Image (cartoon, rainbow, N blue to C red; front, side, top):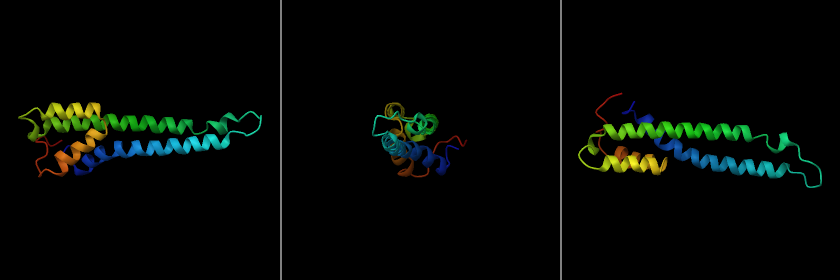
Length: 125
C-alpha cells in the first residue's frame, strides 16, 4: 500500500481538496441559513433554519478522519523512505506533517514522491 501511486496521491490531495470544499460548503450553509431567516417579527422555523447542520457536522468529522489517516500514512511512508534515513530530514518532514497537516503531506508528495525516481519505501505493504 505504501508504493501504490493511487493511495499516495489520494492521501496527499484529499485533505487539501476537502479543506477547500468545506469552506465552500460553509458558505453555502450560511447563505441557506440567512435566506430562511424571516424578515418580519415572525419566529423562524428551527428545522428550516438549521436543517443542514447534521450534514455539515458529518462532513467535518469525515474530513478529520481522512486527515488523520493521511497523517499516519505519510509518517509511515517517510519512516520507510530510504532517502531520509541518513540525515535529519525525517524529523523535519514529520514535524511538517504535524504542524502543517494536509499541506505538509501535499508538499512531501510533490518533493519526495513525484519528483524522485522510483525509490519508494523498501517495505512493500
